[in-house]
Length: 122
Image (cartoon, rainbow, N blue to C red; front, side):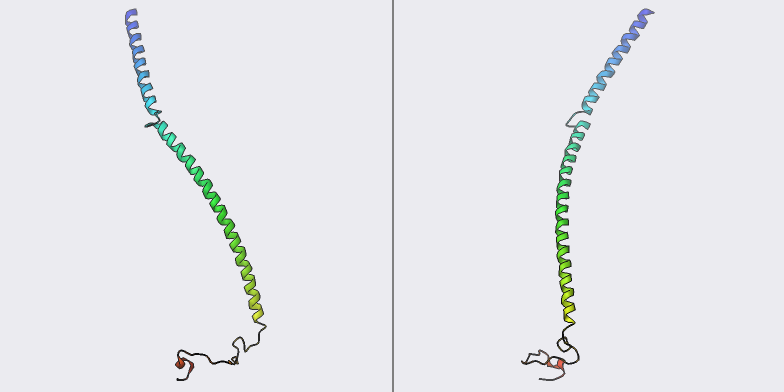
C-alpha cells in the first residue's frame, strides 16, 4: 500500500512539474515584447507618449489662436467705434450734400452710360 502511495505521489509530482512547465511557456509567450501582451503594452505606451506630445502642441496652437482672435476682436471693436463716430458726424452735414430734397449742383459735366435711365435721349 505504501508503494502505491509512493507511485501516486511521484505521478502527482511529475504532473505538477509538467503543469508548471506548460504555465511557464505560456507566461513567456504572454509577456513576449514582440508578439504578446508585453508588445501590445509597449506599443500602447509609445502611442500614449506620442499623443501627449501632440496634445501639448495642439494646446500651444490653440493658445496662439485665441490670442490672435482676441487681438482681431479688439481691432474690430475699435474700428466699429470709429465707424459709429463717422456716422454720427454725417448727421451734422447739410441735407443737400447727403442727397436730401435738393441735389448738389455739379460744376463739371459727367458721363452717363445709359441716358435712357436718366429720362432723356442722347
